[in-house]
Image (cartoon, rainbow, N blue to C red; front, top):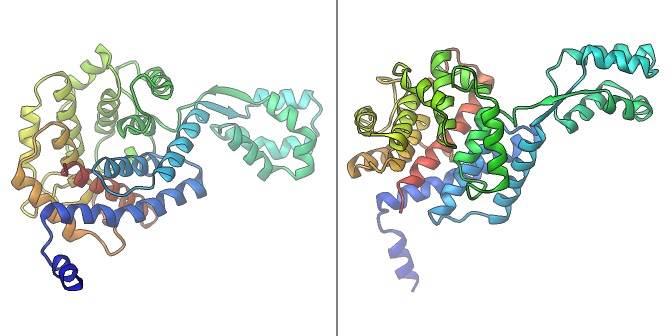
Amino acid sequence: MLLLVLALSSLPQTPEDSARRAIERSLPYLEREGVAWIEKRACLSCHHVPFLLWSFREARDRGLPVDAKKLAEWTEWSRKESLAQRVRVKLTEPSLGALREAGLPAEILAKLAPLAKHPGWNEDGYLRELAKTLSADELAAHREALVRHAAREKGDGGGIDAMAQLLSGGAYGSDASEFTTATRTRIADLQQADGGWKPGGQLFALKRTPAEATEVTTMWVMLTMDPSKKALEFVEKAAPGATNEWLAVRMLVAKRDGDPAPFRKKLAARQNRDGGWAWLHGGPSDAFATGQALYALSVAGAMDADAVAKARRYLVETQGADGSWAVDGLTAKPKPSKEPIYRYWGTAWAAIGLARTLP
């Protein structure tokens, strides 16, 4: 029996086996860094938490072992955090004036004054900031007034991109779910007069024009809801973008509302000889662009077997010892402090793309 087990284990892996193994190796890294982001930053982000959920759901749906309890906990945390971020609490000059009239001492008002320059927090974040600013006794004595006189306005749900990614990753079930409906409503509220949606976070830092960043965000958003006529017109008049992401998501929009074939042909033609795709056409392959291309082509129903085999081989051969993929060349001015962000983002896209090549 032992000899049989050893013989079976020594059989060469199929390309499909290799893809599964690469995904399995990436999941501990994605869990470790994604959970650390939640615990240390309490932030949804456009590059960590939604992609933690998305990559694990894709892996689970392809039969890979995933801890269902953990995935449910992360999903629920994200739901609550996004809802909490839809109300922004802030101190304004009128707030400080009302607190002055309520009898807060001048020395406490002086401590609070710098907070009026901040764009705001959710309810819990506001209280945490007050706890950093005031002593425990000061906060206890004036907490009620500080909560009552704070200004409140609509928040962004953790960011337009994060909300769209949560929906794209399918974390919240059917189109009729309460969270999905509320999220689409908030997204619609944030649409600009020209029909587009303005990105945030790291989206403007990537190597592309601000106009292209806005177009990409707009197209990802459009895939999560019934787009308005203004949104469709905004995309239709956009000039071709420089990045692989623009082409991939433009193809998905075309598949939904028209003929994706012209964009699909261009995207397929951009595959490099090593099997990967590049952030900018003609550049070196990277896991971010390769995972996105595999995902988009699979959704569009255009998976050429030879192209898939080459892409799988590229990703399997470039995966790091810790299960992650290094990603370079996405930003015009790389910063060492940002490297973990792009590594995580690229690893998640690689795992998603590989999963989409599996039955």
